[in-house]
Length: 299
Length: 269
Image 1 (spheres, rainbow over the protein chains, first blue to last red):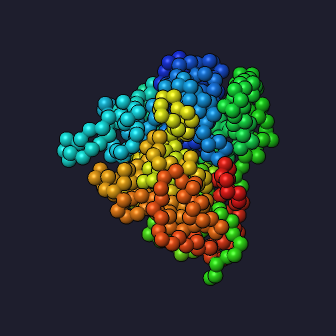
Image 2: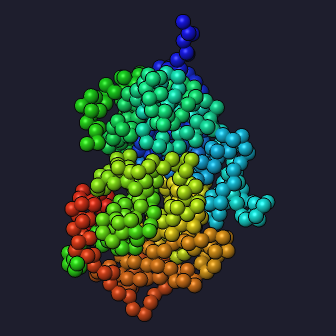
Image 3: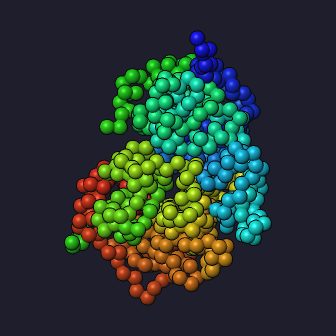
């Protein structure tokens, strides 16, 4: 008999053990879609602090929730909003206005340069865009120089190397062969740059299923797989469910109470109800309720 | 075809922007872009059947049927011919010029079409107002794109003499300053809730082209914090064609999602 291959499947608690105060964590997805929220909620539950969070290009309210819960010290960001639910992420906005948040602001193309540099073990990557903008003026880590070959002005975008990337995908087998539905946004760029990656998935599928459709495989070699059905909630999961607009509005209302009136009551109630009281992802889903969850269907 | 008598400003903005697109255009959209996405779908359903739309910068030639969700929503990728990988391919498509047209709005737009959506105030590290950030517009501005600017808040806070943060390079400091940096193309047209503007070819200053029904050139100037290039006569923005309006209302955006963009606008739609 052949020896058995080692499964990389962890439960959410074991996976969260990998995340420690002060780490640099990249979080996959795109605005209101495909964020590994079961893991994000674990970070908050455990009270992990002083994180450098590398948000997706672009992230959004997933990152704002971490700011609201006091987990973030430094943020790498291209955009912090929630599409038409809210033009500016509320806790991000207030923290930035008070000068409480260390922000590495860049544009999406620059963001991918920074991850590419890390993946390829380069100190920086040249980028033509951003010339003439204010980015290099306010961010001393982005430097303008003249290309030694052509003499053209270029920006050097420094490498950003996450200790850990946490991403959301539709499927993975037990051995970390991941299949997204859709493009997977910038998740692959995060995996390439990061020391380790945890993929939180909707379903763990048999290895034979992956082999039936290798073209759908988007990543191989993630370090751990966490199964969490409806795990991107309240955000969308391509192929599975749409975002929960009602829930997102509840969060935005809590954010606005703080941003406009300085009232932290509603966000504290939100955190208590949805994150601190439920101890597991399953308890979170029970709090949301089966009726709401099954209604999040696009047709 | 005939022009419509009854229309609203959101409808006029979509139809006017649609007319600016051609069958040769390959257009991708960003966040909260109900007006450009509606215009793209409308142009494709009428005079520009060859127009290629890259939905949410992902779904190439997507055919969702109508505006059915957020403009970056995965539901908008329906029936596409390809998912464009954002990391591996998208920015190469942008650099090499395959994706040449982009529509942008921002909290501040200056007289040379430079755009800011990052901060308001003089101290970047402690801004008066923190905005969401530029997403992809900073790269787009420097990468030779033909840029169409739209705004539903034509007022002196949005149309400023100088942006507090230059996230997206328009015509930079005017004249040939953009070209001197080796950047091609640039902002083409500005469509607002009051008027249509372009850029005077030599100075690259913003110039009034037409005013929407019921608006005067004087009112536009009063709502603009810099001096517009003002032609001797300013016509009214042509009313939408009846067929365009029917398609917009019944087929392209039957839920009128585009009206979401008028939150906070002095123009009621």
